[in-house]
Image 1 (cartoon, each protein chain N blue to C red):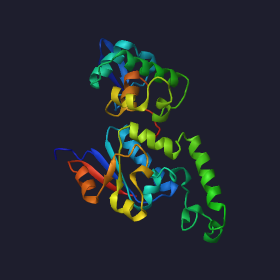
Image 2 (image 1 turned 60 degrees about the horizontal axis):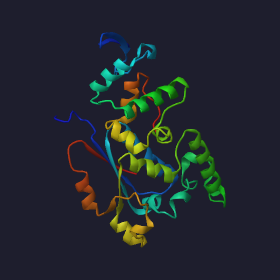
Image 3 (image 1 turned 60 degrees about the vertical axis):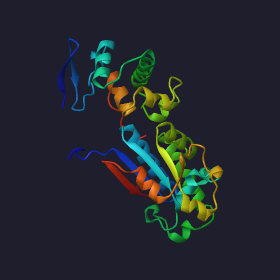
Image 4 (image 1 turned 30 degrees about the horizontal axis):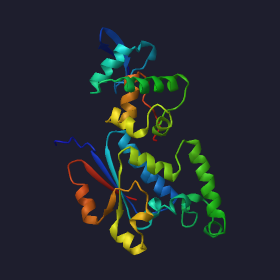
Length: 159
Length: 104
C-alpha cells in the first residue's frame, strides 16, 4: 500500500450540540492537527449550535438519557440539574486546560482546521451565514463535503 | 528504550521516537542538527519559541497548544507556520525535551 495505512486527513461530522460531544469533536480535530494530520469538521443538525454565535456559549451536557451520569433519569430532568452538571464539568475541564467553546473554535481555526456548515441543516433551522462564527470556511452540501475528503488516507467520523 | 545517537560530533541519548532523554546533553548545535533532520531551517523566531518551551519545561509547566498561544512569544497560527508538521512534537524534539503528553 502506498500510504502504509497512514491517516492523512480526518473528516469529522458533528451532529450533536451536547457539550461532551462537541468537546470530543474538537479534541479529535485539534489532536489530528497536532500530529500533522489534516482535519475538517462538518457541522450538521444540532451540531450547528456549536458554531452559532448566540448559542455556542450556552451548550449543556446531557443529564437525561445518559446512563453514564449515574443519576436517576427523573432527577436529571429537574430544573437546574443540567446547568449544575454543566458548570461542574466546565470547572473540571478548565483544570485540564481545556478551552471554552469559543476559544477552542479560534484555536482550531488558527491550527488550520477547516470548518463547514451543512446547507440542508442551515435551511431547516433557518440559520443565515452571519449567525455563525466568522472563522467558518463556508456552507457545503453533503456532496461538497465528500469531495473535500477525497484522497488516500482520509478517514470519516460521525459524532 | 534508550538508544545512543551520533550528532554533530556529540553522542546523545534518544528514545525510539527520537526525543532526547537527557536535556543536559543538549546544546544549540544539537538543536540545529535536530531541526535539519525534521526539515526545519531555524530562524531567530524559531529559537525564541524553542527557548520559551525549554524555560516552561525547566519550570515544570505542562505544554499545550493553548499555552503556546497565550505565551506572548508566538500565536497558534504562526506556531503552525514555523513548525508545519506536528508543531508541538517537532518543537519539543528540537528543544531536547520529552514529548508533551497532553491531548490538547
